Length: 435
Image (cartoon, rainbow, N blue to C red; front, side, top):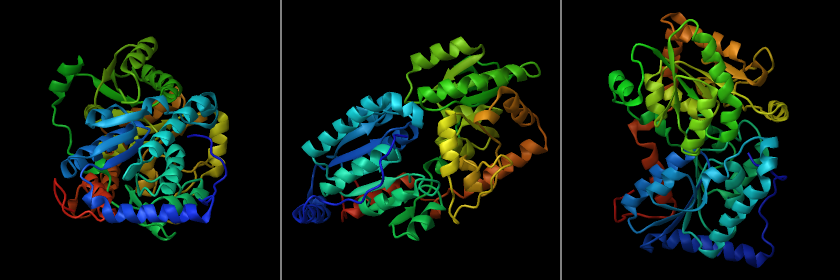
């Protein structure tokens, strides 16, 4: 997360500026249906947002074949057809102290995005999560009269509640992936819709255990444990050594092999070099869902990956480590509204894993900061590697939580996002379909 200044409402410099912006927005809403080659700005700064952005681009290209896609994204969005003004892997940093070291470069990249918006005004903007950058981009987009669709809500229901004003002022449509978010926003005057979670509608990987073992050089008779240490270098540095330490302890009892999926925001060469220094029996793999599906259990850094693990359904443990300062600040700031039932643990920590917030109770262990040690993690993992009641209960609880993420009527969440983008601008029939 980037350091933020005090929230402020959007106030044009002059009354005429407000009139120009409103007039521009009205023209856009009324005329985009006639634009044969719309310019669509998308901004996603993390691995999960990169995947969602790529899916949105693919969907919109079938409906608007002449569209141009530009902005901030990862390699998946670039492959899907985005002209990247800024690369996501260059700006993905998190934590108060972590961001300070990278602030000059991050802000330089941010201003590069702003210049691109002003130089080539987009017809619509789709902002995906990544609130510390996207809220500021939304301010400039609003001033230019560009309609804004936000997909994957920032966690305003947890902290930084003051930013709710920014949503109310700068976002035309909020599309949420968690069911409790829609009533939270609607109760506060925001046009919000729960579209379902894209991961909840995906089918399970089809590869067999034998095929997967052959492709990745694994021993099919061994227990496989998947490690998802995060989508940023700093997260990997903070989380992976302790994860591997826990598996070294468990290797005295079990014959284990380790699967580490490569996030799209991390260079494979760096991760391979990093992993090779830390241990043996480590296999870097390309697909996180497939690794989670075939693994006996997993250790997952808090974030979107916990939802990925939830939708696969195999047992896992949530972990995370940041600086002591960041942890202390976040602990003091996190407060959940009535829409989210959550109780603190013995240390006064509220749950942070999305899997536990979705379930409305703690169904997966969370080991954060000082509790995140190799010994504690090994103790939490051990019963999940065995056939027993603890493993069986977690599997059942994960299935119940996944059901809560399904959209109404079995619809496609990404398709509903594209529908909302087009409906916002009054688009009816398009070259590639209708809404």
